[in-house]
Amino acid sequence: MTFGKFNARKPALAAGPVIAAMGVVFGDIGTSPLYAASTTFGVGSSGTAGPTTDYIYGSTATILYALALIVTVLYVRFLMRADNRGEGGLLALFGLLRRSSLKARTVAVFTVVAMVGAAMFLGDSVITPAISVLSAVEGLELVQPELASLVVPIAVVILVGVFAIQQFGTRTIGRLFGPIMLLWFVTLAVTGGASILQHPAVLQALSPHWVIMFFAEQPGTAFLALGAIVLAVTGAEALYADLGHFGRKSITQAWVFVVFPALVLNYLGQASLAIRDPHRAAASFFGLVPGWGQIPMVILATIATIIASQAVISGTYSVIHQAWRLGFFPPLRVIHTSAKSEGQIYVPAINALLAVAVLSVTIGFQGSAALASAYGIAVTTTISITTVVYIAWSWAHSRRITVRIVVASGILVVTVSFLVANLPKAASGGWLPLAIGAIVFTIMTVWWAGQQRIRAARRLGEMPIDELQSFIASHKADLYRVSGDAVFITRNPTIVPVALRTMVTRNHALQKRAILLSWSTVDVPTTLGMNKRITVETFPSGIVRVVAKVGFREHPRMTTLLTEARAVDKNALDDFAASRATFFISTPVPRFNNTSKMFRWAQVLFLALDRLAPDPLDLIELPRDRTIVLARETPL
Image 1 (cartoon, one colour):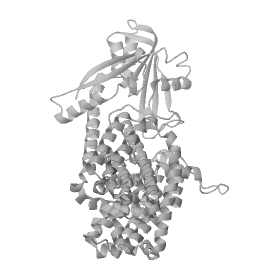
Image 2: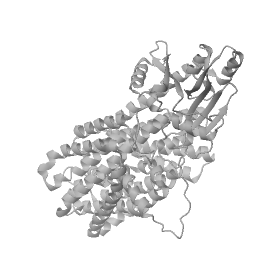
Image 3: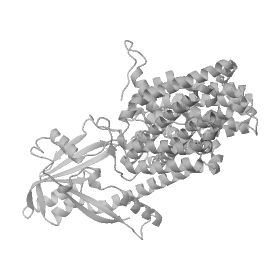
Image 4: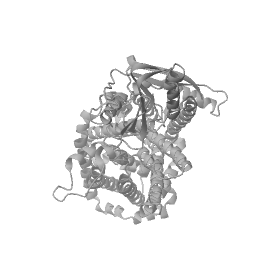
């Protein structure tokens, strides 16, 4: 995706795309004011006394400059320019790094780093829906304190509804997201601005000297406050992850002209309220709203958090799908919910697991304040790892120290400081994302290691295509040619799959036209429109080799690839019809290996994951009535 300069004859601010971006991209970070400021003020409170004025100024200034540095500079200015054919996100960035001229060992190290980052993102995905919805529904306690016992049940009902509608896709309800979030940000700005007018001196928090004084005069308290302040930047990763959906221009304009100003006004407004009445600092967000507006604000906040949850859930599907395409995760059944957008997907297994995890967290923690301790670790880990990968890619791209490397390195120090400040919270809730991340990382590494062993074992049973050509030429007289077309599926275009090798070398039979179809997942989101997406090569023996490139966000459909191949080379596939061909696929059946270097528990886990994987015929959409599967036991 390429963006040119603004055209002077067109308005600089394109309202449609900007509002649409607000509806999806900024749901998470846009609902952070619900809990970020009040949690931060709580760190500076002692007993019944609220936070001091200096603490409020210092912590608020730190929130504002964290937004400026991490979101505006790191994500908007730097990361969103590091797009992988228009797509963003940690795994897309890792794809850029993997294509660079780094040593294999270095790439291997960053493969592990990318796995850790993706795993922590998924840990974050469990917490975000729970804390967002809980923080909104908790506004009922301010209206009617006796409703406190209903907060968790109401949140559970809302979350069940959110996960239940996933199977229908977000296309229809997505049209409502933008206008609602625009109303939300306007409300943030108005309520915050009204509070600022009651204490204009709070604008002092815009000065960076308050950040310096905060850490100089209260270093211990300031360090602990970082664990809460980081809540203000949760959702920053969504700006980069959703780059392919809305483009850099729309996301940047939405942030600069609407979202960032609204957040600044609201955080300053909450600071103004806390200074005027420190005892109300614990509920500073809803304290900005007059009594008559409490119920409407609770309703609007709940809708906004539902939107934030929806964006995170959709992002989880995308990360899992991309991880599978890159070989980091077991294959799962993927349902495309839009005929127009390849990126709109639904993964039933992940939806079910995520729903159980989110509901368990909601019921287990019982409130947003308890979940706040669990939230920061996942966010800071993901942001820090993304920054590290970005710095590595920038170095590999330029081979010299540039301004962006220096600035990104400085911001990395900030994000790591946030991470370190969150580590003490591991015992009080921070263990949750770490545990989830560890589980996901274990699954990724075990799957990756098991697949490497299976590939090595398969290579022993396969044959180079040149060797097969020689065999066919030397056995031409006794090789029986069967009428019709046969399509042999393989992942390596230079290798003959076991099914074809067995048919020729053992059965001495071969179709008059045998098509060797292979595809590779490349480090770009989509290959549609790419030159040489499909290449066709004909061999004298009657074998036709078709090689296709598939992006990591695409779903490989064999019949579609063959139809495209026929359009590329009509001579080689002049009368070919996928509806008449017979398909052959060689499938390894992994089994336990007592002599393997792979740990016993890892083999057990891999075998369990392999059994949960969907049928390979469904994954690549092969016709069952015309497909022959050759299964072969493969020891791990």
